Amino acid sequence: MTQDELKTQVGQAALQYVVPGEIVGVGTGSTVNKFIEALASMKASIKGAVSSSVASTEKLQALGIPVFDANEVTELSVYIDGADEIDGQGHMVKGGGAALTREKIVAALSKRFVCIADESKLVQALGAFPLPVEVIPMAAGRIARQFAVLGGTASLRQKDGKPLVTDNGQQILDVTGLRIADPLGFETEVSQWPGVVTVGVFAHQKAAVCLLGTASGVKTLTF
Ligand code: 5RP
Image (cartoon, rainbow, N blue to C red; front, side, top):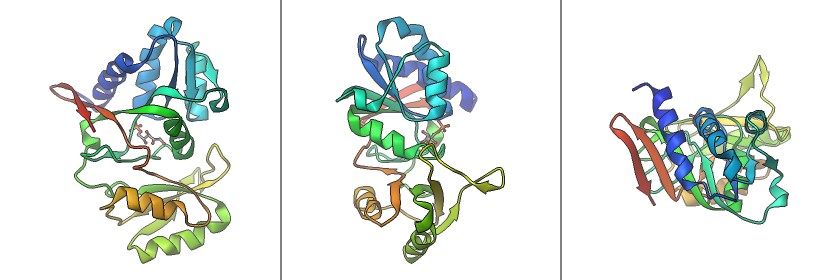
């Protein structure tokens, strides 16, 4: 099975977690795009979605799924999103698609995070995937030096030869060389560095369930 087929499989499997009559939280990325396509098949039985990015909003709306502002809801039953890495406890690294800040906000609004991923994303310890960190541009240099103290190497994410600008008007540092042994402690520490908007470790907002696409079918991991 190709990686694309594994993503389609988990995108469809996630429909069982969508609560009829409610608003669902929707993440960002190629796996979530498969979920959004599947969600269109049951759009008549949901109220709509809260989206985590401009890209997902556009896709949801193009398929006729109403999109609500996050401030219009107090709580969501479920948030469906992908991950760049997920460990055996449901901690994740996210932000490969630069949407980590809004993803963390919608995850925090939700009772249950359902992660959808192909099996290449399951890791023993977080840190092999370059860690995305959304930063206020004037703090990027100082934050890069703070990561260097932890053994990391930070580089400013580029797009079309220029620093990428996020949906929130900020920039992304991608940090290699980190081994994140204590995801909760790491997220807590880095989140309070001045100029850090969001660190791409999701430990406070970890997954409750992971639907993992494998060659032998969808495996359900619960944490
Ligand atoms: C976007 C994300 C995505 O969930 C993550 O990058 C996984 O994406 P994909 O499903 O395309 O592999 O965090 O900011």
